[in-house]
Length: 639
Image 1 (spheres, rainbow, N blue to C red):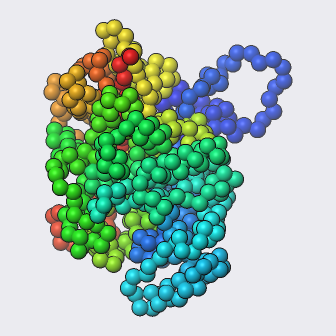
Image 2: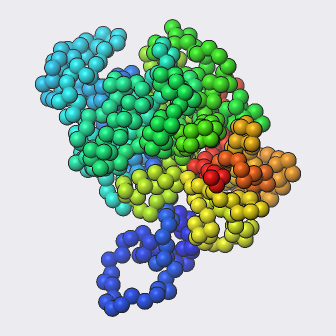
Image 3: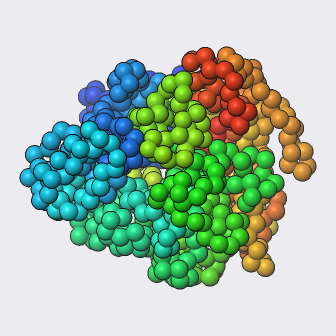
């Protein structure tokens, strides 16, 4: 595992002991005295990140009052969520034992700011809640709700700021308590949960707010929620004030853009006015990353937006629950905006937003959509499970059972559970497992998204990579010395030079082989048109890539009935150097890598096998082709 984790560094298996002592920072031997001389040890001079850390920036617990606790049946505390993420065995509310195959390296518990902690405090009769204005009356209503059902109206603001502050203080102090530098990183965070900025129109505009800092700084605020304002501009202003006042650092991560009704990456602000430079400045300052894949579907692209991309239709949700619905079917939603659905979807998917960002950069001088890509779960069960064969669902009411893939969410929400995707995780290239190092890596966008498998991916861009660079054992050293990593920028193209890219990917050590590597390019041509192209740059099993970029299918070893597959196809590792044949030095562009696994059983197949389920409707997918998406590398012509 250690040698594989550091595969792309110059550290080879035969010197893994050196890695343990000098790279991983656990040496305790006395150091010799005297003047330092040049070291024979090659790892002494490493000045770039050699480890990828895996985490989830989006976990809800019993402290999320509405959709997790009251409606989702989640009574599992944040404390248990931390224990589970660290690899410990826990017991779910249905009595099943569960554990991650491998622990996570970092976690953000991102409970909803709105009514934060109220349901959990009602269940435990928390003294701070009972002492708050209206606390006793709310408890009485809660007891009636438990006895008779129906709906419970909860308005946390009515309990007063002192109570809100007491809940948040418990949140940030717990994050500090579980933060263990070098072993496990716990960030303080919450979710701002706006349901749209266009009057009467639903749009999931949620952002996960992540703080770098400890409770001395994070405890000085009360979370700014959508009940304070549903406008993202007001959230960014709050974050700017926090940084100015405390000297801390914070970011906001947009998620679930595929259900935003075109609003997440709209070309207008929340007042439906065209984006200005000031808007682009503050958005790009705080919205550094995007959650591109999660349980409620994948937001990389859509078949309508990318009709020539054969892999664009992955875990696609077109509306809440994967289908159209009326307002009567879903109480919080209104009719979709009128107009071209293509135009609306451009505000919902990452690839389209990245292209529109180039256009805004040309017009304003600032790119409002210059974000890196991560995955996270958005689980509302407290348990971060993104593996198909160990998938405990989104809600506690949807834990593994013979019925769950056919069920809708509780209390009348039109969400056929088979639509849910077992995704995803964030991979972060950082120097060490600490808040400071991981947050810095996220800020420089040296991160990538996985739909679940822990695929190791390196991606570099520059002007002088050669084919031999993909063959050397020290790929990472070559990558950093001759270019920039994912999240970086290229400019000042040398005369008669096209950008070249160095890519290496290794399979999840406990997962499937790799099918292919692809580079997705987006650009703004000389006539102002936004374009995209998918290049297959490496394929497993010695398959040839045609001049048109096509490659035959890798095939499938999946046995659906047995919920099994083999690694008889695909490759455990793919490396390649690729030069853009269509480059124009005067055109804005971005590039990112998509890594595809060979087909594997989807979580629905594992459920069918475990619970002996028969006669499953054809509409329910049983096979998946999981993947990873790197953050882009951007090219900007010299000014």
